[in-house]
Amino acid sequence: MIFPIGDQNEPGGRRAPVTLLLILANPYEITHNVDLVGPKEITVGGERGLIDEEPGPRPIWLTIFTSMFLHGGWLHILGNMWFLWIFGDNVERRLGSPMYVVLYLGAGVVAGIAQILPNPDSFIPSLGASGAIAGVLGAYLALFPTNRVWILVFRFIPFAVPALVAIGLWFLLNLVNGVGQIALTEQTGGVAYLAHVGGFIAGLVVGLIFRSQPPARTQRFGYGR
Image 1 (cartoon, rainbow, N blue to C red):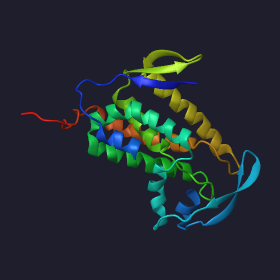
Image 2 (image 1 turned 180 degrees about the vertical axis):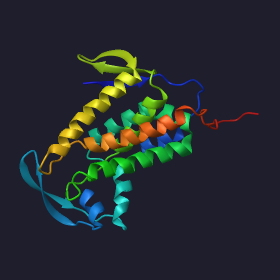
Image 3 (image 1 turned 120 degrees about the vertical axis):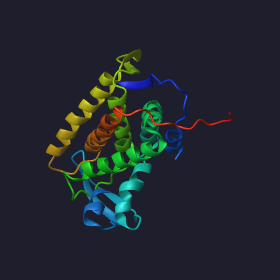
């Protein structure tokens, strides 16, 4: 298991307000344009059960955006926000806040589509910011591949590795599990690995596009002349 605890911040001292605001701040429905309400039978871990679908927004496709800001519990949201806290600030400073918002939301949409496409008839709700944050990781890898990332491994021993290693291993793990998820013939709940893969690739493409461009000018907060 690899768990990041910090990274090498870029010089300049510019703020990353969108990252801070984001930290503070369902497939069948999308593909069939219908709002599911009431209990639906699903299979999780080989066992059948019921989930109670609540009414969604109108139009229903807005759930692909609203689901990015919903989580399945405190551990889910804290884990996602931790990754965003570590990697988001450098990416926002490099792209500028407006483009960073586009990256985040765009990667989240791509992530949702990637999770939906292999099984468009699934009733299992999909929620969380991890697909959008995977896009931030992809952009980080493209923009700062040699930045040091401090990670915990084995018996919680911290040491620094290049971002290419830390994030690259994270992506490979999700890719392998995502391929396995496609091979499943029944509906199962758990981690949305395909969303991670889709969001990551979208962010990686954006990062590669911006890697050869000069850093965006981000206005400093405070007084001055």
